[in-house]
Length: 391
Ligand SMILES: Cc1ncc(COP(=O)(O)O)c(C=O)c1O
Image (tube, rainbow, N blue to C red; front, side, top):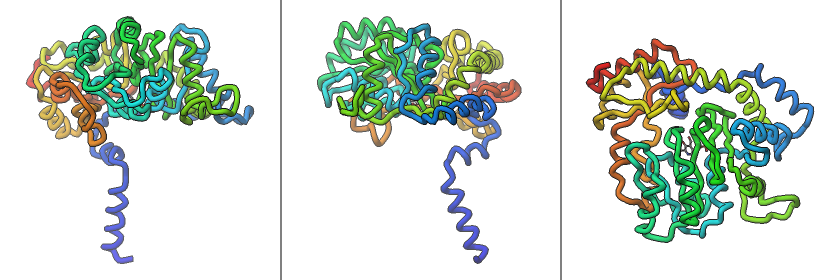
């Protein structure tokens, strides 16, 4: 083959590589380096699959993982339903509460696109609402008034725990009983800070989260009826027979993913300490600047796998560019908001001034369990210089 043809073919091959792989090569400090349990840590669990010859359909590892997750939150068995991923978990947790088909599902605009996709999958229409500037989340005390002005009937609400930060769960329990609406908490990144209640919460076990199985998730509720219904809807609508009881999905976690979940829980104490130490190192490196802030309580009362900085000025563009110049990768996890995608632009929304400011004044910086202190120091120096801040 001629040399030029070879070069063309190579260029085409490179163009087909996922952008994250190329980005990884371009940056000396990547935004993330997920770390799941090693092959050695998985071995016992994988061998048990060889023994059981059960590979999915709520096998022993999946049920065991659900029980361990319930225990982790101090709950009884029968309160956790694993699912294939949080997006489907959110859709199912909405569907089991049977909001009117085609009604609005109010959610913050300040969230990931998956929150909106889940509402659409559940047969609802996302309705994007602005967030509270202090918590970056919906405020249950203000939302009822807001919903009275909605452009169509509202059937459900999906509060989001932004980047894993804690949420006023009691406020949402009260909201649900006052409003009679279906409520599902998008706790995708909130494995650590979640406080379960009767209102179902959905946690992601994606590889990028603090506890990961590669892909996966779980729905948790103190109401055992929710777990039963989620199970049914995640398994073709089957419950005790092969007659489908309701429109449903196949959204089950396989035994292989459950094996990873067990190994990840085995080392959770160590994993959590590593995330906390990395957050501490950022806190020390950033100092007490009045220009650059960590999320409130981040690394102190709760941990997460993303370190999202906010700035006193809407300076994210400038800081992003400065860090890119230093070969430090950054990410706007939620872009300019969940309403601002080709797939979601036509859905109704309120005015979104807070979301707009957040999209221009926040930026995620490199964060992983084993990020080294000198790397954090380099990132913090570059951020503070770009923000014009002192320690
Ligand atoms: C707020 C939010 N909701 C939902 C999801 C979807 O989770 P999953 O990847 O498990 O489907 C994510 C993923 O990061 C998320 O950040």
